[in-house]
Amino acid sequence: MTRPLTIMVSAGEPSGDALGAGLIDALRALSPGVRIVGIGGPAMRAAGLVSYFGIEELAVVGIREVVLRLRILFRRMRQAADFALRVKPDVVVLIDSGDFHHRVARMIRKDDPSIPIVKYVSPQVWASRPGRAEGLRSYLDHILCLLPFEPAFYERYGLPATFVGHPALERKKLMTGGAGLRARLGIAPDAKILCVLPGSRRPEVRYLLPPFRETARVLRDRIPSLHCIIPTVPNVERQVREAVRNWPTPLSIVTGDADRFAAFDAADAALAASGTVTTELALAGVPMIATYRLGWLTAAIWRRLVTVPHFTIVNLVLGRKAVPEFLQESVRPDLMAEALAPLLAGGEAAQAQRQALAEAIAKLDSGESPSRRAAETILQVAAARG
Image (cartoon, rainbow, N blue to C red; front, side, top):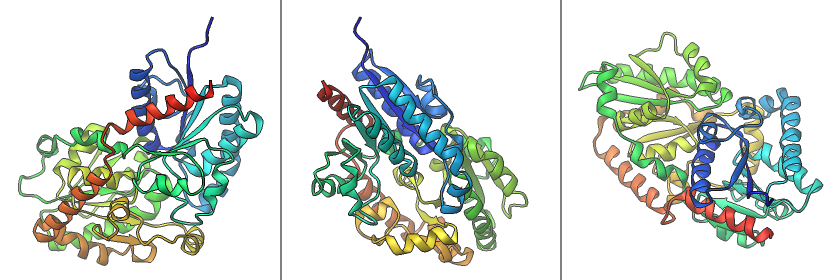
């Protein structure tokens, strides 16, 4: 009996879990008999994946956080690689989470070079130490890129890459329900809503939520009607709820994709950790500021390596700072409140940013469903294996 086409899909954090769920749906639509195995979170499990282990302990950032959990991470890397070696899939798809997945890829390649490995979401080697792209060829067979300029970069190193478009574009139709959410939460029709997004990883929440709280305090004095909404995810929900006690403005915490997208639809502006969520906010047309803060050691190393002028996808794609960015010591309540106030007011500053967001989203569109294009490329890689 012929074995069905088998694809291993692995994600290591909530944003990758969302990409994986869309990819699984697209793979099954294109190849109904495909067998999909791997590692994922709630979204991928809802799409039908039986996950080998949970991803909650994998979503860490910063040198200190990684060191503290090194033993667990290395054990999970070995387990993920051994799972691939035991199953022998026709292709392995590793979604984002570079520090984790690149080590898994090297382990698989070392022990069984015959298994094709596809990386979904390009590592940002073009942003720091571009020479690392040379080494990627030794253990990756193809890279699925979210940004339009990335395939040309990899061509210089002889590494096949495909621009699939940003998967967040598939969620644009879900950015609705703002009026209903406002009514359900009892938010006055004339209140200004600030969407507060401190990230989906525990260190992000720890570093960013305190200055976010103080930013809300500064804004409250300028905008008395201000109401904050914090969409959160299961792996940090408890941490968020504990950290927002004595929040200076009326506050609502929401969970689940439907309420998160409804919050975007309702928001006048957003205060966000840099990441996939800034692209989702751009899709919803929400004026925003983007922030990021790392531990001091990680930040010191990061500053020596990074060569790009921006860290937000919208700004990278446009080649200019359309979205105000606040990094490390500039993550200050006074500075962030000063940038947010005109966006919340909804005047010229807000309108100018909305136009820039729409321009960036157009550049992130590959012309078809990103998940479908990614699935088509993965199936081609599997077929080429013979």
